[in-house]
Length: 91
Image (cartoon, rainbow, N blue to C red; front, top):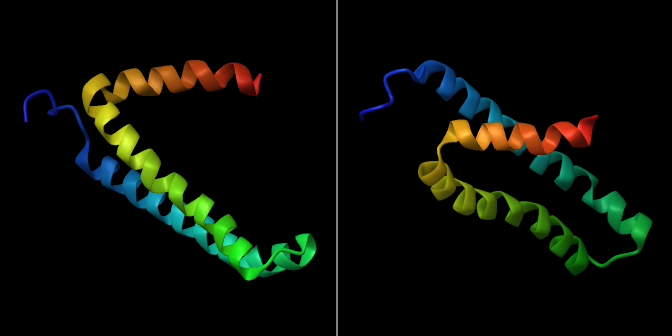
């Protein structure tokens, strides 16, 4: 694995675990408030399922697109691009 000597494997593992916990919490919160959303917006159980599905589908689609992109472009360049794109939005 040439070129990967500078990576701190322990930090990458911890960051991955934090990302998975964050995603799990987002799914849990969404599932917890789904019934109240159905009552408030007067939507059926089927529509509630579709609302929940839209939140769940974003994760695998992002993984399928961003995974190969990270391999092609490189994580350093993608993080730089993300910082440049989101920094003006937070100003």
